[in-house]
Length: 312
Image (cartoon, rainbow, N blue to C red; front, side, top):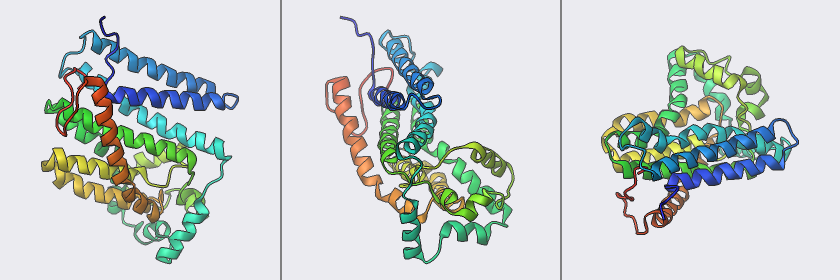
């Protein structure tokens, strides 16, 4: 019997995440536009199955633009997942958070609030501010770069593996944020909330990021920092598969970590916990990839090869 859908490893995670978010929004269907949002996640699964059907029929040419879109469509879902898990967390907990604990912990460890001290001390330096804003924006480039570069080098199996590791790590963090709400310094500390980046002028990226921050609801996904955790995972993937890129990736990642506190999105403790969760996240996502790949291909997978489908 001819296969109707060729679901790769990432497809299966995307289907589960979309179903999870759809069901969670149905639980709160009476509030706002949640019913419509749930329908959107169901439509997301239709997109996944559409790509899988095209793949099964051999309609996707390796190395083509369609192959690229078929491989990386899930990255377009990341923002929706992140924004909606924050909304869900606020509905589940009624807007409550654990910020008071982390505020006191920050004081106990450092004696100050670095998220207040850093911009207060250096915020007059426009060039520094611009670099910080750029580094924060570059998170999106850093998490895409390993798999995109491998794809462009026609190392499709490794690109698929990197994409899965990052996607599965995000999935764990999304569930965690739903259960463990921390809003972050810019929401919890009144003086930072009042400033809302008006004290951090810059140039192009300053304007772009302040425009993004202006209307974004980001209160609820602070601990651990996904910017820190996922960028470190991306750095590990660069070191493993693309070591020649490290001269760019390492300094940019370091500056990104500083930016999370400088832009008062995170406590320093969030950064430390972001580093701490990487070993279990990386182990979990790697083991999960091997198990799902065994189901997909019917054989074990090593660290550099994974299946023979177009979607690889």
